[in-house]
Length: 179
Image (tube, rainbow, N blue to C red; front, side, top):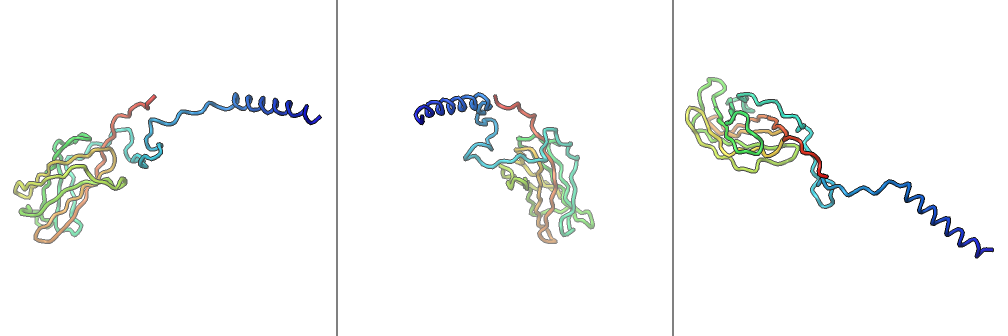
């Protein structure tokens, strides 16, 4: 009697397996549009501040006083609204915070970083003093959307000072997912 049950049990197991396969959803294709989900790829998380909507236009002039309060720095971009991924320049005007006298002969440096991504620009900006407290910074490039912090480091008669400016670079037009 035991030998008659074996073929019947095998048939029931086979039938149950076939039914389970038909009821299960088809396996999904491995993701191809999101490289972050691929094994061995870097853990890239988009900057949440870089929405698919363009960022508000930059003000015509960014102004701030250095951390120790000795100097005022104003930045104006050329072009005024730098497109993402293109080289642009800035004119920095540096004055004494008390007298508003232009700071000439200072050592001036300008750089930008993305704090959330822990990286900076992919270019090395060059600074040229124009006179009357004005410094031209060439070779700036914001290569991705999101929050960028420009930091100006300068050294004048009052010593070394730093000032930061925050800007938000707009996102590119969203692209449809890959098929």
